[in-house]
Amino acid sequence: MAPVRAGSAAESATGDTALLQALLDAEAALTRAQASLGLAPAAVAAAVTEAARAGRFDARGLALRARSGGNPVIPLVADLTDAVGPEAAPYVHRGATSQDILDTGLMLVAARTIDAMLADLDRTARALAMAAAEHRDTPMPGRTLTQHAVPTTFGLKVAGWRSLVLDARDRLSAVRAALPVQLGGAAGTLAAFAAHAEADGAPHAEGTAPATGTTTTGTSGAAGAPGPTSGPGSHGPEAESPDGAAHGVPATDLGLRLLAAYARELPLAEPALPWHTLRTPVADLGSACAFTCGALGKFAADVLVLSRSEVGEVGEGGGGTSSAMPHKTNPVRATLVAATARQAPALASTLLSSLAAEDERPPGAWHAEWQPVRELLRLTGGAAHAAAELAEGLQVFPYRMHEHLALTEGLIVSERFTVALGPLLGRARARKLLDAASRKAVDEGITLDEALEEEEPALREMLSGERLRDLTDPTHYTGSAPALTDRALRRGPADPATTVASAPTAAPTAAPTGSEDTTPETGER
Image (cartoon, rainbow, N blue to C red; front, side, top):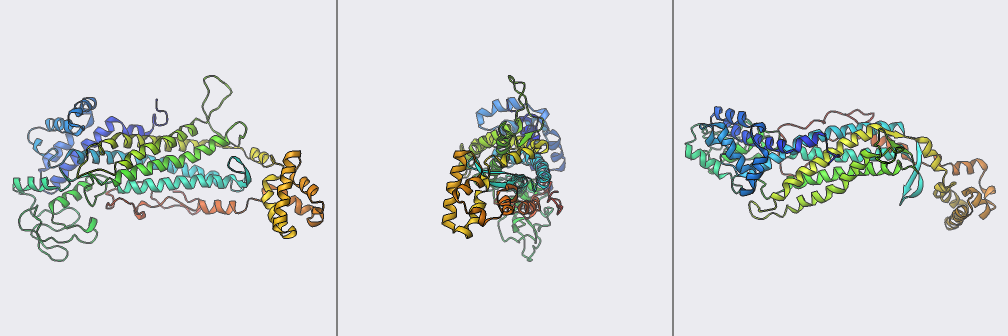
């Protein structure tokens, strides 16, 4: 009963099985990260990774058992521990807390869903760029407060739709690049990881450096400072990471090294801090999704108005049928997109309200996010998919636009007359004349130029017939619309590597797709 997302990539990427797989991926990545630092045997990491397959676990059973502990990670850890065998069991979920895994899992779900969204937004932008270029000079009525205003061009209108699509794409791309792993342990201090290493004697931790080239225990750092001497969890004198290391953090603290290693195991960024109650990533994600639904909703809303039977300036190719009226071709894709724009803000507000989360880990605020995050991703992904189909199949009827330019018998260019008559009559008198002539034209059903001549008989002496015809032709009053369209089409998608995201994260370990160079003609990839 959710057609906007049914069958879309977002639906499969956010389902229960997909979330379960993301949680398992987070658990396996944590074990591999610990193995990379010598804190777990490599064979254990391989065993956990092999066991971490969603098909081996009962999602419904996990949900039911989660009621006793408040989240599904608790029963999942128990089942995964049983699945890996006795040798690997002590290393499953070692040092982590449930929120570490669930937050990381949700970020993985978001990353995988956004990647599909970006592809659909690229499709939409390409189709709209072609339509805007084709109709750069196609005149149509501009409408303000539901009424004819002054002429514009369909190309400029479409360029505006595309601009919003690119705004949405840029925001989602920046959020995607900043989605972080979560790792903090029980209260965000990473203390348990060092404690486990010390309890084990850390036979492999000493002298092991992460792949980024940071310093090792007992060696000098970038500035030649000695490393700690009391084990991998020491907080003694620390050397700074070499240039390019994430956040410039000390290289010798085990918790920080593990955090960096964890991020390297996943297509997610390394956060500066554990963010158990610092919910910037989730708030940014919710805001970007809500913006995207709204941006696509503007496109849909215009299509819905312009495709009305009374207007008929555009049509949705392959529209839907009616259960009762055989003649109808309903704009169903635009309708579904418009529906998401009305739902998304409320879901995003829930995520924004969770910013006010107390203590080091919150009761309720974090739990309130799980379903809104998934539903927002579903709505946004579904809207992006439907918008791409809408843009690619959009039908345009310029002859209807031309007919509508004449509906008001010249009133649509009254602004131009006001400007043209100002130097001849004075600004105030010209405006008074146009006001009176406009009312006469409407009341008597005559054209604006006829009404002007009746109100001001000397008009023919002031303006030649050729000048009068030019002033009354709405196709000659589109201003800079074509040039604005050209300028808008020179814009392409932003490179997420150069976009400053608000979340305090390092660069992602794997950049999202869609950052290729653009062509100067259309600004498209």
